[in-house]
Picture 1 (cartoon, helix red, strand yellow):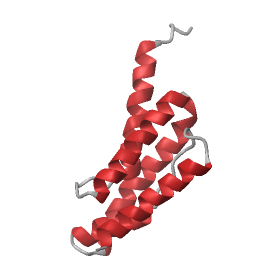
Picture 2 (tube, rainbow, N blue to C red; picture 1 turned 180 degrees about the vertical axis):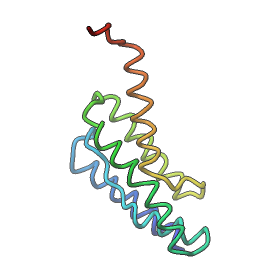
Picture 3 (cartoon, rainbow, N blue to C red; picture 1 turned 180 degrees about the horizontal axis):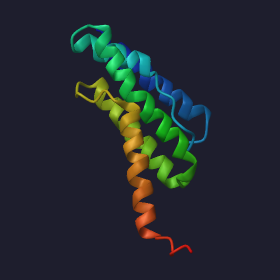
Length: 123
């Protein structure tokens, strides 16, 4: 019962943010609800929730910090991946780490952009 509610809340937050703002805006997800759900399916402890929050916070910070370095197309791609992860969570897969996935998308996208446009040597 908690899984659909938790995931529906997270997806609703992302969807309403998408409807109200540009599709390239930084996504907002209810991580606390997601981590509470993670805890409920693991060992129902505060330790599991705390672990989830420890994983998500630096990922959120990284993704937020570098979001403006992405092009609009790259932002849309990363938002779509996050939305897909939220949909998968709602339908029973084991994806719980929302901003971790978004941070991975940002990191990989930036790395690919840098490799396609290498900087010249700086003296």
